Length: 501
Image (spheres, rainbow, N blue to C red):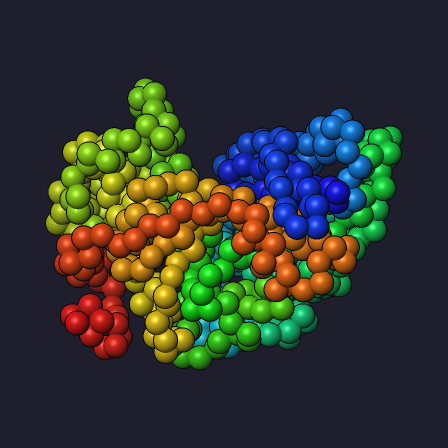
């Protein structure tokens, strides 16, 4: 039996998961779960990276306590954020959170020097204020001396791997999200950084998923022989890249939604697709294992998470499961709003911001929590449909099925609404897709599997999914038209014909 550990950390929680492979099936078991909450100091948002590392070590100790010998360890996390190391290999500052306000105005500052279309042509990456490029621009404005003294920039999973092993390498799938790579390559765009007067000396070696970093070097962990001999593997360290590896694909023409704090909606392509339409539609081309992920970032369950916090601050003791039960009886199609409105990106009172957007569009805000939550889910589903229409235009073919993986696969109402809004069957699960992809990459790296096709067959044998068929399609089509009118979103002639047909 091959035992390995997947460390899967998202924007709100992390897990240490044991994978056990018997040559035929992969069994996963969550051993340890911990929260991942930002720390705000003097108005600046940080990731508590040292606590996260302590949680990782606690999880590995629990795995060792099971008396199972661990062959390998892999880490996947969210994208774009980073830590800077000094000449002594010490972290110069806690990593800043991508929702920190320091990036306000940085896209515009960059685009004063490089037109957004040229930037997309060079990098193939979606224009978002959270991207590493804009964070570095903010860093240069805020503390140019810190950038000049930094010897290494490590993205979050690379930083955690450095803590484990002492190796300072950058994994490819996460590196592609930074907007700092030449599209379709594994090379940093040094000319881009030079044009922006940003230093580049801290950017290091880029390695492919499946690369071994060697063994653990953390003295605390070396005391236990059951984990001390484990190899640390650079998996597909962007959690979405790992999640895609964990999809039990049943059709060549599929789209996926990696559903968590963010919803990442896309499909797989052999090479980046960079043209005027993908630039105009603001799609992104991110690296995967032996392919690229053509996708768009959508706000996701962040809207529910912040609504839950807002309700609790108002003294209403309710959880997301409570809110979903209320949504079952909420009024259908009561209001429409753009889930991608920039006002919804920062943390805070999301319900009040949605009410404000409704009033601006001459709509009546929802009068009860059930209707509010139902409306959030409906409008997320409409945004999925909108991105699907755009994706089909780019590909010039119809998507047959949508896979929803990650935590959002548990949200039955959202899964059904997605099927209804898109008119496509939705296959929900596995919830643990990122961990499964993480573990699968470790199996490939250790020659327990020979190819990605073998991994795909293993995933199909090992996971349970649930099918949602579209219902009430005509009613949803009429509501989708109202959504487009209310949000001012435009479709191509082809997509409009699909609605009218």
